[in-house]
Length: 224
Image (cartoon, rainbow, N blue to C red):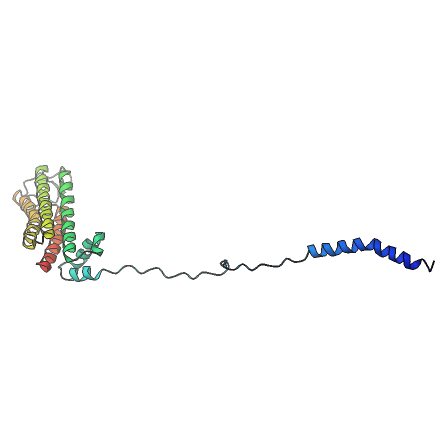
């Protein structure tokens, strides 16, 4: 049996060789895969720095210097900045914007008055109008219609003023805006003559238009 032992050993090795090879292949297949480098991919775990929000745009230098020369600075700035073209307009352009703002105001008041049949106000001393059940005077519709007409005339005067500004006829623009500011005063005078209390809301409207006209006149003066 000793002489056959080497041959038997060789036979055993030959039988075990496929098994050993299959074990090596399985071991290689279960090895940890190599992690590939992923360049250029953002790191989602790191926090991105957030920039501070942009500051609110400052009032344009020309708008600021122009409004500084007017009687009502805040109103002037609000009126000019309401028009996007003020960001690139020159002084004449800013003047046209101011006049247009006054015209828009007068137009809105004229429309509101034209659509109002009557309004109430406190009883003035010696008022000839009959008070309602709430003790407040009802303003006659015809009186409101006259006021609507006056505000409409103010609007037309302001539109004429804007054309004059475009033509660089600043003296005419001054006259037209000054006239527009006076039309609401005619309305107030009519209330006084009729001995009817002037409605508070209408008084506010008159003051608002007067202030816008003053701003426009102040800017026209800078151009003249």
